[in-house]
Image (cartoon, rainbow, N blue to C red; front, side):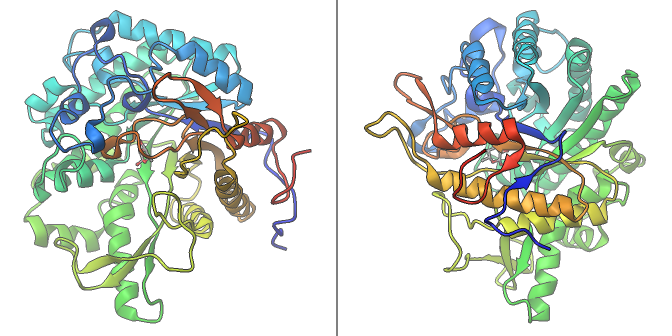
Length: 464
Ligand code: FCB
């Protein structure tokens, strides 16, 4: 029997309730302690690249306020936190020399989390590539995958005694699409062949790094990618052309990454699309697919919304196009459709297509612009409703057998949202940009109570 919204739902005992951030989006302090320049430092300086001329120079100043933010998490009562290491803090030149002050910083941060009983989930690459590597060609170059494996090994040696779970790469599709195809993210390239090359090198980097991790012999250590997964829904489900178009778009966005990592190679249908668009995929060398598939221990699911796809009307080189969302579906403050049912279907489908692979929801969240009212509190009821809807969907997926181990809400705190600057607010914690003052939103208090009890209250009801 499907539970009703009026039911309280108990989650599995060991379910991890977490929050999520990334280095460039929260740290600031971009020249502190020998940090090298990253491609985002540079991109933010390109006129018009980021709304309002915003940069990550200060962000949430978390590099300096790490202890305060850990105390916040402890106050919330969440038991897990996903964050990323800034490669240019650890290897300012992207290769060779290791900056001890960068290592010391993350040592303190990890120890601080553990002291509060918060389990770290560490991302190695959340988009802040050292500029020195970009100058040598960045992810277009195969060598960058090797440099990444070297950097990963440094991190495993430094933190692997305390960190068990590692996200190697965040969202390879978005890096290819926004960074190299559309020029909307760093490094700002617009080159279709470069984008597919980059995506391959990111997968290769993952495979090499996972190999480094497992060569170190900590049996319980795990590595996985956090994918930007967008369910593709046919515009007209009764029209075979739209159904085929949605399957194509799924190949482009989702299967192109999941299939090779889980041993199925690049999907043939999408390979044909790519070859028609850019010619031979000559950057795929013998043995690469073996490396990419060598071992992944979980699937990181970043889920925000779906894509409605229709045949023809091509976006770029593909024989399909993204259609507007439905009028009767609610939207977040960024206009993204809110469709928890698609998260449920996605999780069940991952379980079906990649059986036995643990699933971690590494990102999910929504923009709402609520700020402190006269009473000083932030009454972001819409975010609570968003959370409630998505967590009910997760619960249904678990009941259907999907091995979902945890949920990391994006984001802990309002932060630097890439090309949109500071405008979108995704946080469970509000930040006052002028003073850096943090205020836990009602959603943060609600989420903390959920984390403590493991029980989702009836919709609109209170936690017991
Ligand atoms: C994802 C990114 C994350 C954040 C959210 C809103 O694509 O991984 O850094 O920007 O979107």
